[in-house]
Length: 118
Image (cartoon, rainbow, N blue to C red):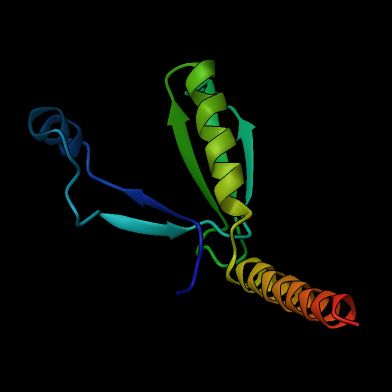
């Protein structure tokens, strides 16, 4: 299974529906792949707490998310920065390293068993 970081976004009315139902609609308004993106805090004249997500693959290069408080901005920033580190390439590399370590561990066990009996 491929692993990649994504941000799902919904219409404003989904918040009211979520509060009423207690769960999100499975069909978001859109999906933003954030693996490999640059995620950083910023602000603008209208909104003080903004999170900027940048990627060459985005049509306009940047997506801005507004937070209501600095605390919210910091929490979202932390989660999005962690998700941006999850890329298909990193995932495959991690799986490859795990396989190599498992193979080395099996080889060491075989060597131990071989030499213990002698």
